[in-house]
Length: 171
Image (cartoon, rainbow, N blue to C red; front, side, top):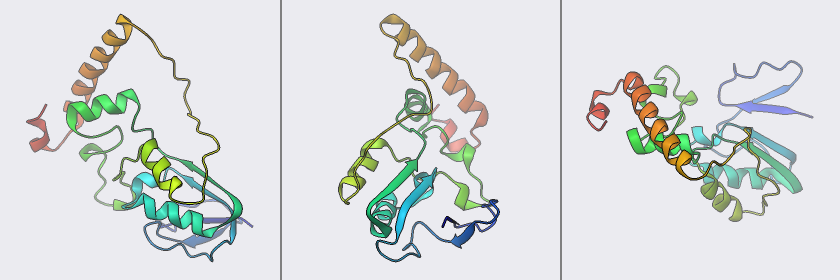
């Protein structure tokens, strides 16, 4: 059986799939050792305590069960430059705020080291880490020129999009 879950009951559009409303910041509505798979797609960054959620995933998974997770890569170079320039990672911060629905906000930029640490506190083991982009490393002076261009571009784009006047004084 497949069970879909979300805090917003209107988000799941799949037909013939059982739905359970759940808050990943709380205890999951499943018994211990009851699930073969848990799939969490772009969820950790919306949570107040992703460590608790990973512990809950471990609790509800059967021995040998699999956890599949995706999350934005806040440690990529573009996100790091944006953080350096304006204090927010890519896809986080005032510009992305949606005061009409706080559940869609990215509130917690969770990087791989934090996810790895949270998983090591459980019985869960990382089997594979992948990216959804073909990332190539460019060396030497080209990297320096590229980073300077990205920093300028990030600053220019962010200035246009940031609505928080207090933050503008830091740009």
